[in-house]
Image (cartoon, rainbow, N blue to C red; front, side, top):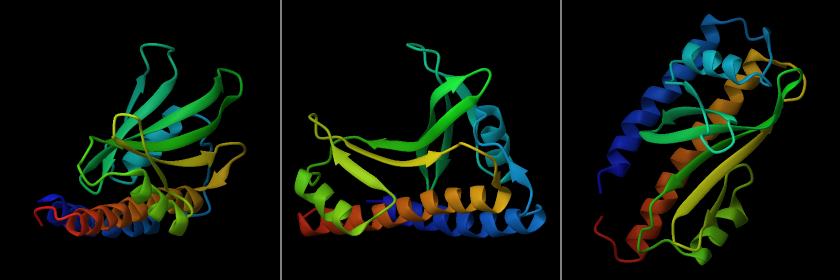
Length: 171
């Protein structure tokens, strides 16, 4: 499968982009992550695609982006015009593969702390990382959060490649 090679190139580019971006910006600059439009701007400053959208069903904001050659969203929760949003969640979803299993998810979750995965009733894999948005944080903290997401999803792709190989996949 080409995912491993594409992920390696995207990861290498992303790893270089974040430190370069962080060096060009004031790491002590305080940012407000409770405002989805601010988070979108910060992602764009970091060199990521960041399209601010709203869910059709409930109007809640989310950001569509990508890292490591894979799409992800940042979902915002408990939002109001006056106070902003109290949390956000980095989220991605992967269509069912024959090697996806609850046992696979348990192996990942037993060893990983920040990025969680589940296999849903249809056999698809979802992964997420929750972040509080209450109070301002330094730009360096935000950069570190995005870096954690990127690093952990890269680890997940490696793990998935290993799981596919162990299941006798075409690798």
